[in-house]
Image 1 (cartoon, rainbow, N blue to C red):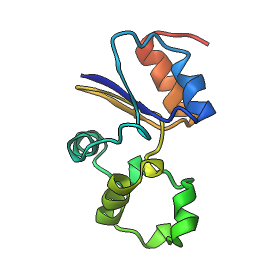
Image 2 (cartoon, rainbow, N blue to C red):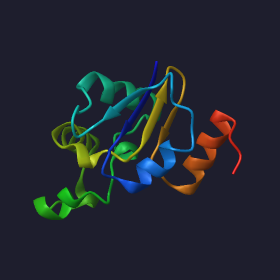
Image 3 (tube, one colour):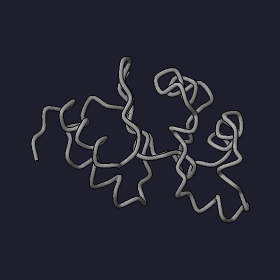
Image 4 (cartoon, rainbow, N blue to C red):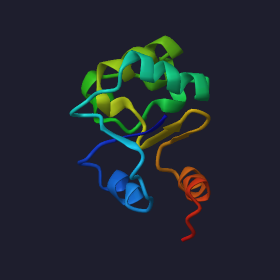
Length: 118
């Protein structure tokens, strides 16, 4: 399995995806085709945390008046399944590995994984 979960309207996602050869990867635009409960559980198996998959920058947090500090793992899971913007993006997932988000360390790890230098 090789899947990338991303958002087409996200410039950062597009910029990261453009760096790699994704010809044999399944590209999932999460707005058009939201992730399934099974996919979320597969991500959780690799991260051992729904919070690690949760984007604390989602516009839905403010819209819903959520207090992120008070959320529990089950809350993160339910929110991730409820709205695509709660997923930290992009997510690159293989049978063995997962790369979540766009922070510098994650992007560097992805470059290493793909054998791409800057």
